[in-house]
Image (cartoon, rainbow, N blue to C red; front, side, top):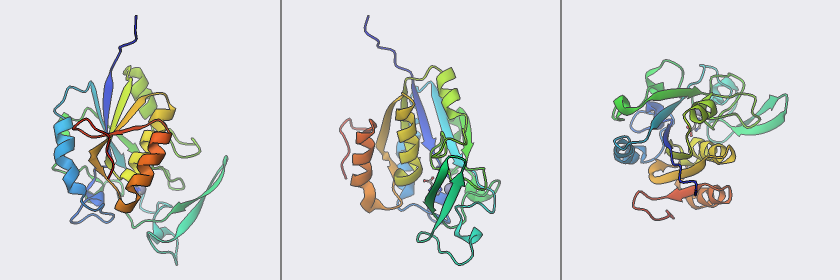
Length: 218
Ligand code: VGL
Ligand code: ZN
């Protein structure tokens, strides 16, 4: 018999106050426009609905403030793990554990979310993906949650398209989940990067789709 098994999970990435206008320290342009789509998706019968939270210590290595003489959005820092080293972008302070900026956006239908997964807690490691850091030194536990739930398909929305949504979708596809990004449910830090990110995601097996059923190109 054909394998028609379909058990989808909704993953809402980092819809936190600090990533949203008007007061977010790292506000993604037009982030609030994705909330109606996400709240609609949260009314649908996904067997598993997970929100992730960027959840940094106050002196996280991704903060420009941690590295004297650097500037957010412009400077980089080197991250070294037992696996090797890589450069990563520096940001304004954001999503510091327990602060109002790290809270899920109040206009999100939080009551419909089953589980919250935190990421980015390690001071010395950047973690855009909600699964792992780039060297797989840190595992958030999200993969285990999905596997124990028998999930086949992962639908990714949230912030930001060109950073944490992208990395989460790439890891989900690499872990063998059929992976979808819903275009109306995400916004980029750099809107001009949209097409390039869509191309990269498609190459990596991620389907970038519209709630209206077509592929999104914009
Ligand atoms: C993110 C930059 C820094 C994201 C998190 O959620 O996309 N971007 N930390
Ligand atoms: Zn972060």
